Each structure stands twice: as C-alpha cells, then as structure tokens.
Amino acid sequence: MVHLSAAIQRIAPSATLGVSAKAAELRKAGRDIISLSVGEPDFPVPPAARDAAIRAIEEGNNHYTAVEGTPALRAAIADKFKRDNGLTYAPEDIIVSTGGKQVIFNAMLATVGEGDEVIIPTPYWVSYPEIVALVGGTSRIVPTRIEDGFKMLSAELAAAITPKTRWLILNSPSNPTGSVYTADELTEFAEVLRRNPHVWIMSDDIYEHIHYMRGNFANIAQVAPDLADRTLTVNGASKAFAMTGWRIGYAGGPRALIKAMGKAQSQMTANACAIAQAACLGALTGDMGFLADRSEVFRERRDMVVERLSAIPGLSVAVPDGAFYVFPECAGLIGRRTPSGTVLATDEDVAGYMLEAGVAVVHGAPFGHSPAFRISYATDTASLTTAMDRIEAAVAALA
Ligand code: PLP
Image (tube, rainbow, N blue to C red; front, side, top):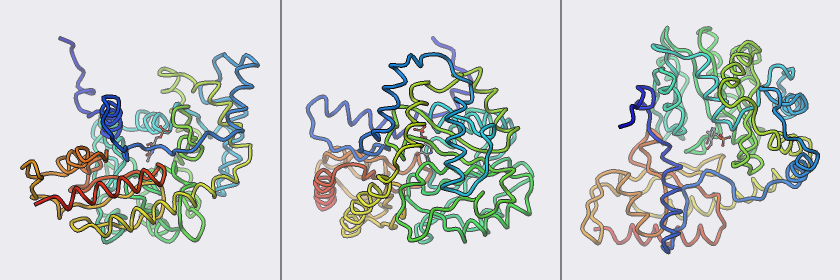
C-alpha cells in the first residue's frame, strides 16, 4: 500500500473540480446534465493572446524562461497594476506562476509553517484552507452572514487576529458569493491592520474585471498604500481572459517575498509555460475593451438567475456584485423528502438531488458555509434558463 504523507492526508481534493468531473462523466454516459459547477468563463480567448501564442510557437519560443517569468511579461504586469489599480511595482516585484493557485501556494509555502494562522472569511474559495493545511499552517475561519452580503465586518477581523496571525486572505469579488468589498470597507480593514503590523494581506483579485459596482474596483494596497509593503496582490489570466487552461497567474508584492516565492517555484515547476506567458503578454498589451462587454453579459445572466432563484421557496439569495457565482442558502430544503423517499439532510444531499434533476451545482460545505450551494452562471442563457426550470421543478416536487 502506498504510504501517504501527513501533509497529503491533511487535505481534501478540490470539491469544485470533483463535481465538474462527475458532471462530465454523467454527460458522457448520456445523461442530460447542465453543469453550473465550473469556475471558468464561457468566452473565447482574446485574439491578441491567441495570436501571440501562435507567434511564440512559430518563433521557436520553446525554452525555459526566467523562473519568475519573462522580463517582458513582468514589465507588462507592472504596467497593468499601475494602469488598473494605481499600484507601483518594478518588474522585480512581480512573479508569474502556473495559475493563481500556484501563486497562492508559493506565498503560503514561503511564509507559513507549524503554528502560524491565516485568517480566511467564509464562505471561501475551496482551496485556501487546503493550501494552508498543506504547508502545515492553521486556518482561522471567520464566518459571515447572508444579511451582511457575506462580507466580514472590521470588528470581526480585529477579533480574529492573534499574535500567531501571519496572513489575512481577502477575495473580492468573491468565489463563491460574488460579494465585493467597497473602498470604504477596505479602508476600515486597513485601520485594523495598521494596529497589527505583523499581519500580511493577500488580496486575491482574480475576478477583478467581473463586477457590477457603479464605481471602480478597489483593492487594499490601492486604498491603503502604507500597507503595500506587506500586501501581496494576486491576479491572473484565468478569469479575465477566459484562459483557465493556459495556467497563468501572477502577483505583485514586496521584493523579499517575491524572491522567496520564486525560490519555492524554482524547485517545483520552475517557469510557467513559455507559450502561455507569451499569450498573457499579448492579452495584457492588446485591446481589453471586451472586458466591459463581458461584464455586461454576466450582469444580465446574474439578474435572471437571482430573480429565478429568489422566487423559489426554501432558498435565500444575496445579490452578488461580481464574479459569476450565486450562493443561495437552502435551509428551507433541509429535512424535506424527495419523490424517491430520500430525506435531504445536508447541502450535499441537496446538490445530489439537483444532479438527479439534471443540474450540477457545488454544495456549500467545501466553501465553509452550510446549508447552501454555489451556482456558476458562466454558461449560455438558454442553458441557464433550463437549469432554473429544473431546479424550480425539483424543489416543487419535495414533500
Ligand atoms: N482564486 C480564486 C478565488 C479562484 O476562484 C481561483 C480559481 O477558481 C483561483 C484563485 C485560481 O485560479 P487559477 O489557478 O486558475 O489561475
């Protein structure tokens, strides 16, 4: 029997990837399943990225690059942070990794060990606590409420900080709730963080370009520049450019941290794929006008999905301000009986019942908040409408 390390036994596999794989399997077996489980936009890759990738292949761009990314891409990312977020980074303050996931893993591996705590508000992206556990740290979970739009209050942040706190992870717009922190809310967090100079801040901005707020997107280093020397600003090509499979994430941060992250990466994957780096450079330096148009499409879908879900008895919905997820609570479905006689005891049962009805959603437990489930509306409107019809009918059929 294979001997498994303590580290690997501490973690769970990605629930979202698991549900997506199950939905794909059922589809392959001939079942009519609409998958609302995927965390990726259903748009094409920007032509500038595609053209740059093809050029890179044709030019024989097939060698290792610098571990932290090509100089051209790091410079373009520094320009992006300046242009979009008003943040000043030199190219040496930037790292490019194999997806945002590796950026976060690098940061945790480089800084967190036994006894260190990382503050993670719930509901959270499934991977945060697992990454913290993998490197031997402890997640300090801060529950939020639907009435507060699933947003942590600054007093709750203050109460969660201990002398062992290494990081606060902020994810706005959020996966799975779509909640977005305003500049004022971030300013309140900054006041708490100023009183706690030992706490570093990871701002996961991967959904930056998908939001429906009237004002501009804000992140903490932007509203509190004095905290930039302990803030890691994470972003990437996956969600903005619909390039999830190309695996390019990046971050800007204090140089010593970036260097340590590069050291970790040098012994792991080394550089991110050279062709994908060229593609990301193409996207970042090409026309980005499509981003606003895509956000508008997502907004229309959000409005439709929120309206439909809100009308279903037993579900409670907070209106998301960004990303492409809705996270309905489903306490009203717990304890109800399905037509085949099963009592829905947990949100996993609810998600299983939805799957029987032909819609794949991810239950709330892996996001640290139950009973609830996550719907991704990154799919075409006709499929979304059918999915809403199926969910509505399935709920109506419960005794
Ligand atoms: N952060 C959040 C909140 C996410 O939802 C994801 C992907 O789903 C990532 C980071 C990582 O993205 P990737 O590794 O695909 O760049």
